Image (cartoon, rainbow, N blue to C red):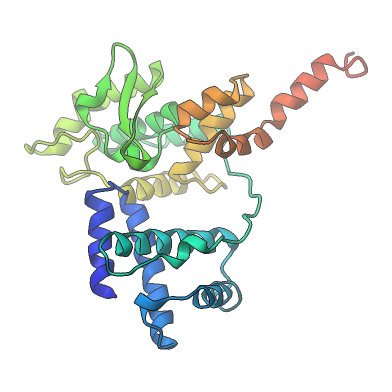
Length: 296
């Protein structure tokens, strides 16, 4: 099975253009499944519905995994077995018959505008600080996924129209927009910091690490973690927090849900609708300004 896992990961990396983050999680999930099969003497080519049901119970009861994690495991295994089916290693994919547990309703975390400003102030004005400021501004301005951000090329940026072409999930291209603050941060980075970071090397990618190479998913996560520690914010911030904040801010300012869906690159409106639970500030404001007994 190990040989096929390696080939599958190569397939999703090269042909499907999955992010490093997704590839890492798929590897961990597949290794967990491989170990489970070995312990129970089950051949991966002859998986049954009962085998999968027991595995889900194992994840839930023994591993204490939440429904979101179990669904991620199933997604990884479903993709892996679809790959095996495509390569004619197996005759059918039993994971296509399996439905995961119902997802828990968990509201995405987001930051307040003043917290974002604190992060910007903590970046500093050296080469790395200028780069980090550009990263933060672009994350919040565009609402793009981290996998889209790290793969942006300099040639993808259209400063005149304040647009960036990104490659999203399933190799789908879309256009993200950015504001004047972000434009200024990007121009400053491209003209001063990026040439110094390249150290005489050349790269088509927008964001460069401290040794002149392509900045990775893990690299951006480390940058954000270090900035949070530096400004002593008592909040959990990940690259996806910026995406959640982007959507929440737009909805709070009156943007319609369909437009937010397009801006985020969501296929289904139902995926975007979770953000409507986060707009209580706007709802409260409308209430206070419209209810006759709320007016002084």
